Image (cartoon, rainbow, N blue to C red; front, side, top):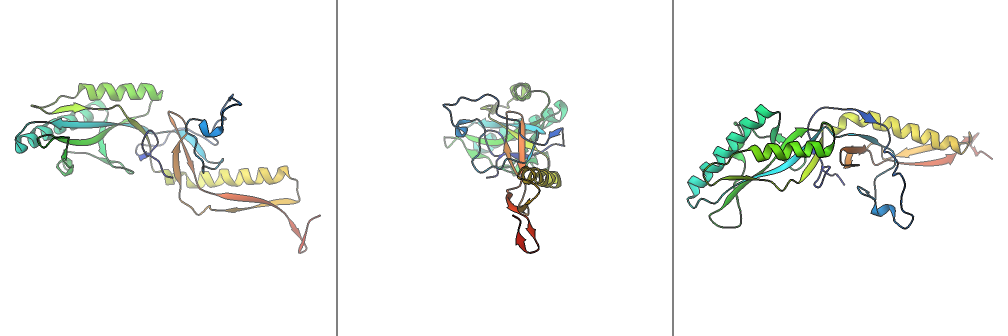
Length: 241
């Protein structure tokens, strides 16, 4: 399943950063526990893929107004949103929207964001996210996002709120396709070699799309849903002894 890496599905954003070839081991585990209980465990995820630090982190942001007059309510939300766009640009953050691919919220398109009902007929809200570059620990980046949102000003009865829910983002996962395929091939060759020179391998599923999932509070795991089989080599049309 494609996921936005975090508490919600993984999103797209930011440029590349350092990478490692394989996910790190779990470390010491409880024998009484199951692998299914491990954090970020995913049933159908293959062993081989590319683990790397995420490029960014996003945090949800909601602008709410309970002014009774609908036109005034919309105006208050728009004014708070425009101020947030300016402050984000000056502070190294970006307002974004989207469920898979992130799209910047700008002064050219902010009015296209829907103003949704917020529990009462005289209350409206706009939902979006703030994106920041993932630098240092995930907690440090989360704290920076929370501090930025706390600095945003409302307008009239419009207020800025957040539940501090975050997701990770990665820029253009498909750019890592060849690197992932090379890791799969290397692992298949190594595994076949363990069984001896009379064994080889066959691989399927490598034409699939790059999938992403979360591997740690700050790392993502990119993979292709491959499968490989270790089989005896054929010699002169016969199975090797």
